[in-house]
Length: 634
Image 1 (tube, rainbow, N blue to C red):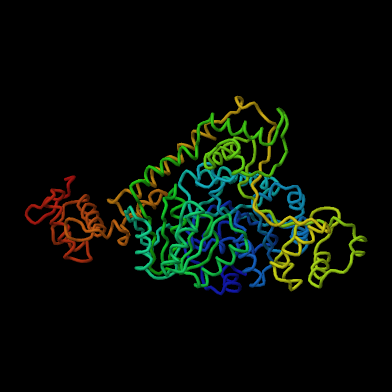
Image 2: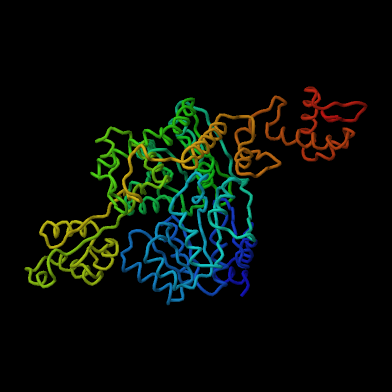
């Protein structure tokens, strides 16, 4: 079957779009390939189609569990065998999934980067027939990207275990510097190829609104522009506050952040996707892998700290191709707040050493101990005890992670687990419980193994389906059984962890290399500066400013951003004026032209072209003599 045959059979499309075909041909021919495609560009097709044309399994590495589940479900609905392995699964579930990848003729295995380093995965990987590796969100591997994740660095080691297997790296946001770094860190071979889809979104109007009352402006915008909306804020508390305020004003809204449990997240996400709730107020934890094409407006109340983050979040508007808006609300104090983040994100080295030292007292760690130890970590408690501010302490721990002294996982999702504290024979001798309790115990015993010797991870949602008992009732019964000491139940929670990768060091011996600290601080400061210039500027087309940052030169203005739409002194819109001015100067740079011929070559609205020419003559940017126009360089 050809690639187009596969596309038609499984997806019903007659042809590929954008650069999909070029990427597919490249990876299909065995070349390491990097594909840069904006949000909504159809990234999944570029690895799913070539993988289906090959014998063996496609290994898909992605940090987005919601996206994994969604894509696995979609593939299965199309009759394609796919699996996912992620945190929260029991060891038995992971073993079954990996065994299926070896013997079950599966085509796709989705896995989070954190799972790559586990012994069980690497052991089973050696027995799998892997046809290609796909690395989604590949900008996360770059030290110079805005979202670096250390677990991605393990991918190069996986390549060593799979010699000759080509890699397809995909991302929606990457500067030229990051593009080079992705290829380096993924050990791309000399014949590798890079394909770039234009990041221009012709239907998306980028707007900056200067206001000292952001809430009033937010309400005004949402009442002026209909349709589904996302409102981004910087902190969790504000998501709730803004959602409550919008609801009180008659605008249906809910909120979303990483601290919510999965059940609440799913419920709110479904409510918003279905249109039952109009506005989702969220931190940047929301949006990755969310497929809702009809978002009409994305509003940022708070300034993102990088053009990459802003471009990706704003790009969730208008994926259906219809007119949409990305609005940034900007107040005078935002520039100060933005620059303060540099010090918060890169605190002084002595402060980082102090956090490291306090951590040793927190865990009562002796000098020379620690290597390989894992501890549950409560950042708020740590900060209260040692008088740190959470933002700076969190940043210090992340820098210590990059420096290799420890691993700090901020909010690792831990599934519920339980163990029976009674022996099996003692369990059967107990007096009869009520019907729900008896049914739940029997379902648990049928669903999981090893419950009498070790904690087993459980899924309350599956227990609800298998027993018919409501989830809240299951929770209450498990707590009751814990109080009766029949079993010990540990409910699902999000817990950060500290993992010591080296034995405890003297704080004065901690070394932070230039790459770990100074270079990354300079890179971060540059992104902050670019973001501040974007918000404060009103002379250049906003779409062109963003595209230029990502290394894409666009020869025309978008015509729909707030800068392009503002009146020019000539009487026409600034974006139109600049486009015509650029044409005039380009044509006259080659040679002087009769005015009539110049107007003919410019084309478009003759009246506007004449207005621009008259203005340029008055400003002495163009000179006319005997009916012939001369450019300013002549």
